[in-house]
Length: 161
Figure 1 (cartoon, rainbow, N blue to C red):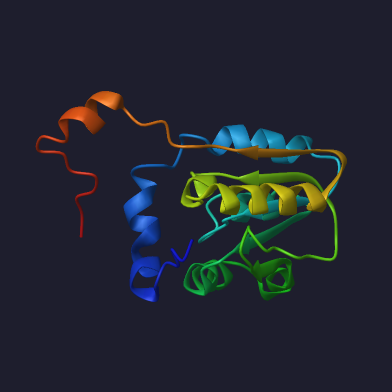
Figure 2: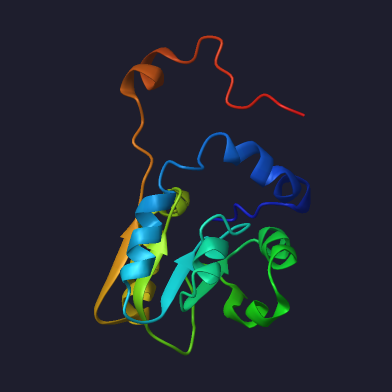
């Protein structure tokens, strides 16, 4: 999973993905974050799409991402007092000295884990980070089999400046 987003991509991430992703799952994760009784960890926090609103709502939330460039963008958007809650770590090897009641991995973070070994490493590490009774919520991309079979015809994922 050496899919680190470089600085050149991180700079445009919000512009590109806001048209694709914002609104699709924000309210779902916001509800789960609000309902958490203890600390929360967002895995793959990126530039802060979910992390920033959670911080603003008063959630006891922490963040990891394996891309320093993405986290640098996130840190530019928030008060420095929250920087100590953000860590450059990989889901497969994450090692934090605390436990969480909720761990979330939104926007197909888990889909970056291609091998079974990577998936199991991630799941085992997340399990170690959870308090008893804690929950891990993640989503995966469910492909359209017709597109996989037939390919795209004149498809544009993003158009903008």
